[in-house]
Length: 97
Image (cartoon, rainbow, N blue to C red; front, side, top):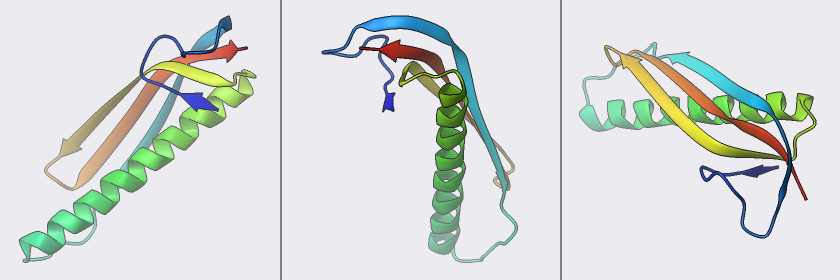
């Protein structure tokens, strides 16, 4: 599956636009440390995990539409008080040749 933030894919022609797809993931940070470096590492790990889950959900939803690529991908991340992370990824599922 080709994933891109651009609206076209060099060397490929978009044959069909199949629809907008999304992938969402949320994660709650449950532990806290008094060491700033440890907190930053935990937060980075949590964000990366949520982002990977959101992208996997995005790809799964595109596969359901029989897409082989997603163009125009946008990522949005929200956090609340540093303990709740919400990642949303949106793009257009397409069939390319």
